[in-house]
Image (tube, rainbow, N blue to C red):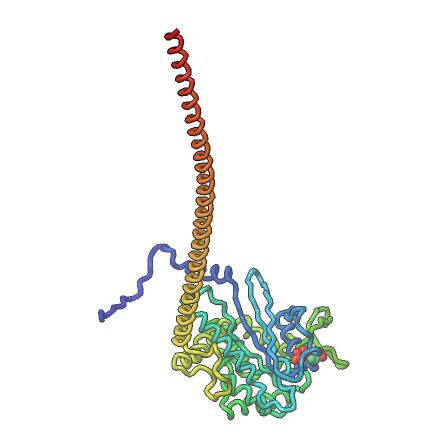
Length: 416
Ligand code: GDP
């Protein structure tokens, strides 16, 4: 292999133009817009929809989405809502994935399964789309982040929380949140966070680690957020007046709990980290870590969860198997097409033969009728010829008779 030598960096003296490449990338990215899939998981009533609406300053749930009270409470369902948001000319196609019914049954032992299946089905879809011969522009429908809502019980993680996060942490970026932070005092909240962190470490759960950033201010934010994990949040859909300012808040007889006030809760820290600083990193980690793990498993023929929780679906195949099955399908399709074409050809030949046979029969019939006509004409002619012959003979006999008479008369005359 030829050795490659890297020369020292040379600073150009004039303007060449490639310094503009970041602007090209920026323009292209803005033109294409961004996609982000956010999953929210937690028992119903923990304020998931309210928080999402507060995060995006709009009603991200569409009209066809059933409101909280109408949602099923028996089994875990997966519901997706897609909404196109625009901020300062930048488009974000946000997919919100809700899991109504999670943790609401009497026995919640397996309520993480539908969520795991959903996350994996997105990976499978992506893998299949990537391994197709004819790759269309890929839409990224993988789950980039999961906001896991912890009930503000003050007693650390529950069994269902531990089980869920353990099952999901290798597949999706989990950000645990303490829901309804306004229902706890500052000290209770601090203690609860400490207990939750301890439980997370003891159970070896990997939650999303906000990475360091170059920007000084963002770096400060990230450090602060890391120190206050799990973030304690609250949401509100109403704007109230606070000292002449309109703020999102929860109104209590003793005062206001302001959603965006960092002294009241970590909502603004969450919003900054999630949307302003690390949205792209969440997507990158999904692609390079979680999806890569899944892909590697698939390539090794281990598709589907290692614990055998789910039978291998028709999608859960390695790319080789996938290509093989596509080849089979293609061959089957070709054979079907060939058989169809053969059948069409045979039908056409049959039709032509039928036509030929019927025109042949036609010809024979016409020939027969012509022969008959000719025979009739021939007989007629024969008849007329016979008549003519008879007439001719009688005429000749008559002439002969006349000649004889004339001769006799002549002789008589001569004699006389
Ligand atoms: P979801 O079922 O998890 O989506 O919960 P909702 O967003 O529908 O909220 C359920 C109830 O909790 C509603 O009455 C909300 O007004 C209330 N709620 C939402 N967020 C908060 C919060 O941060 N603090 C408090 N105290 N109540 C909240």
